[in-house]
Length: 89
Image (cartoon, rainbow, N blue to C red; front, side, top):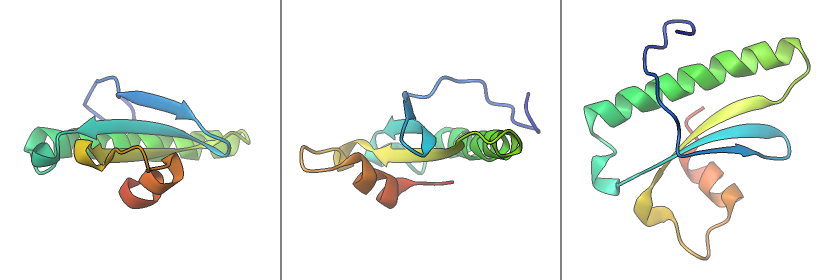
């Protein structure tokens, strides 16, 4: 457990982007208000903040949590666009 983070799960994707690491979750759009999804998202945000704080002490990259509804993923979307629209931390 890290700083009170109780959820132990593996995100859908971890991306090593140019300036940061991204923890990306894709969920069904109709499940985004689900209590379990929200709890996991809060845990992911908290983990990313703690990891970013630790990385900053060592000159490393920060972390960001991205929760994307499934129907937002399309051929014309870029990673930067998804980050801008759905970043939680």
